Length: 235
Ligand code: SF4
Image (cartoon, rainbow, N blue to C red; front, side, top):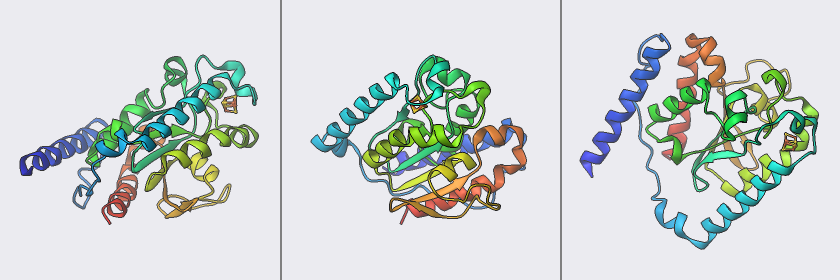
């Protein structure tokens, strides 16, 4: 048990170092990597309730794949619903699919997704332990930000999937996710790093990994936000 925890801590430290090195960062941020006391999920996943959630999510994903409710369906190759664990205590919500996601039908599989995976590992988790989705399920043209009407129509999928997963904490990746989860006012300044709530679930807005690829100096505030998330999960 102790050696498992040690291995997990070492893996987290390696992931954090890799994240820092690849992005030319500023060194390991202050603070320790705290492994939250996670509930064993195996039993819950096997339970009837968890199976029901998985089935309902699959049904929603099918509906999204056939959805034509907004103009974004016109350019999609595949709709992109979610990846990860439907019983997760931690969910990440991004903006919308990009080229690679649209091709594969899986969220966060491009460079930004690879960075997100490293961030998750640096938190002491595996990417398949958390739940990952986006505000809109179809790729906006040229990777533009989803328009309010598109996000508004697609909210029925986002709201339903978050209501089914009911994580303990949501991390909103980028302003678009933060605004559409109601965590910040549209156009408001100083929006990241402040706790909010979505339907009673603690939610932390922070920068999107794609922004971190362009602005690696912003990794430090993001890491501070993720440390807050870990502390909240460890309560
Ligand atoms: S983005 Fe959402 S609302 Fe628009 S077509 Fe795709 S699934 Fe439907």
